[in-house]
Image (cartoon, rainbow, N blue to C red; front, side):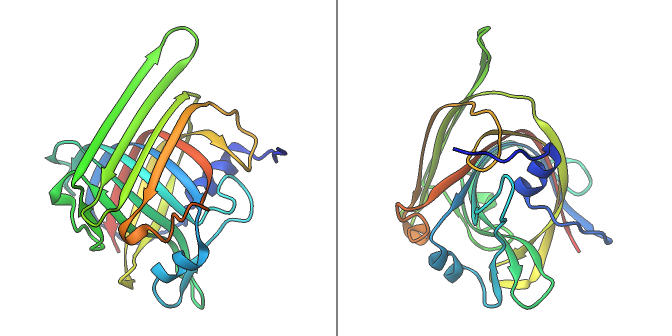
Length: 256
């Protein structure tokens, strides 16, 4: 396989797909998280049907996010804070699908969360009305260093009431994380005139990627996704393009 060498800055920018936003904002909540993200290329026709009229996937043609039209993101939300910085509740786990999007005839550009499963009923239906309380959930993360390398062994598993399932098991050698961050708009799929602004600071460790030259640190890997409302996206022909660990991820959600 031939790889193209790119800068760390370009890898971070394309992997995260951030779009700059500069305006007065009202803070809604803040969180500190650990994440593992899988970038996919899924059935294009099925994905387009899940987007509102006038919107389409914004697919990168180069870099770490090349050809990715959807992301499956697993989150260990370690702490959650209100707009005043005071704790709101304890930790919780969730998984969701996000697609990079743009307006076909307009300036809108960002991401859309197309659905998610959460272990905490308080997170459903969520700001965009498409999170479900998982009927079953499982989470495990083990960190070790036996002298042969620092390893992370992670497992997330969620099943939804409509048969949706999102799960991953990945074991990888941890590498140095590249510090990144930025702001992006997350549009409401039901009404894209409404959106929230996510501002993040994070470290990203790209543990495997099919498009850019990074060491392959993945030792074990399996995933399951599909069923219910997302069955058409994961039809057996989807392709995993990037395996991204976020050992720390700080997020502030704001309203314009």
